[in-house]
Length: 169
Image 1 (cartoon, rainbow, N blue to C red):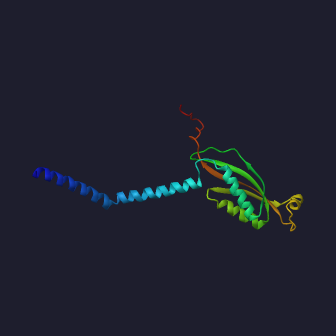
Image 2 (tube, rainbow, N blue to C red; image 1 turned 90 degrees about the vertical axis):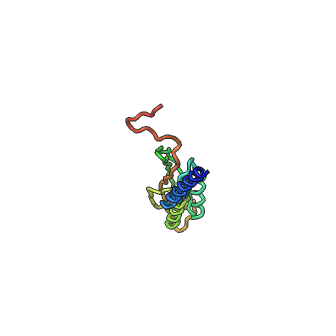
Image 3 (cartoon, one colour; image 1 turned 120 degrees about the vertical axis):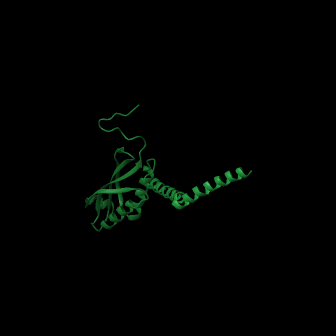
């Protein structure tokens, strides 16, 4: 009985010593904290870069922002997706009509949507007279803004093979 009690006491002492070392090194709490940070980062990435293409909701968001800012959408032209790893890139060419301040606010609204959207290649010019008449612009300061946007979607498959490498079967 004494030997069994001593062995049990030794086992408990080893367990307590191991737990004390873990607590002193902070490994358990540190690990829990890191897991929580990684989960938060993963949730943020899923919001900014979704796992599937959400073009309809993206177009709706862009259209809604145009209405809010008082600009008129002329066109939205999609380009073929560019596969990559870990994200595929989707690009669209947009054409909007509005006044200078409206266009600036609209671009800021697009860039602040809750996913990564990058407006680029902006070109501003005076809108043609027929467009000014059609949109009932009496000030004569209507502009046409042509630009592209880039957004990202989680890659749907493995990355394409590099130049000289072949995919394994």
